[in-house]
Image 1 (cartoon, one colour):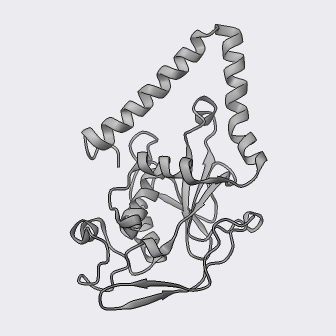
Image 2 (image 1 turned 90 degrees about the vertical axis):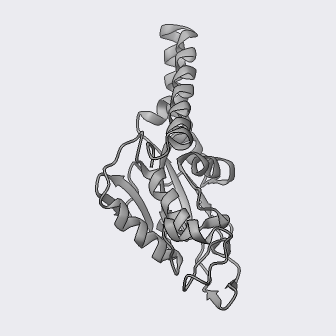
Image 3 (image 1 turned 45 degrees about the vertical axis):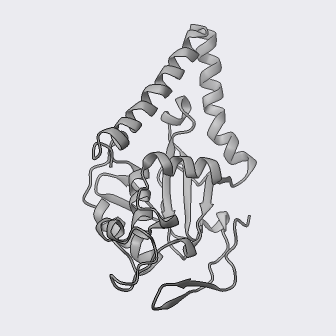
Length: 233
């Protein structure tokens, strides 16, 4: 399956230099290669109750996937919790790779410098990996989305250094693509089964409880990201 294949020749420009980006390979699920992609897979048990929650990773230019899989652990080419179900290939031309402090092309050069700059896509992922190799994993405060958002901030992707777990999740769900129909079935079938069993055993109050769970979870991340900054990485 081919997703947003890279053009034959990409050029990234700054005020005083021009950097040519070599063409990317094709997205190849069979070989588990997703060049410059964000990848998503459902979480066991958690996604059965809330199918919009999953585990994400980000791939190098050669397609190798990196993901924050646990405390002090960034996995390489071994996506935790199963194979990729959704992916979104990003455009490197929308990143900022300053060779020096004066070579920023994003409008937030100061904030980008504070977030951590990179001279290439893979350099940003290396820096992010080194940081998260010293962090404790927590589904509610520091998870796989935190790692990918940190990498996007180092890239200043889309001219922004405000990537977080919420807008990253929205990006993946709004713009990501299912690899195939079975990937969607694998993601939603457990939720459908749990919902049916719950309604049969507890009635419609079960769905009300799941709705309340969803709203509480969303409220927690909104609070942690936008109201109490630093609570959610």
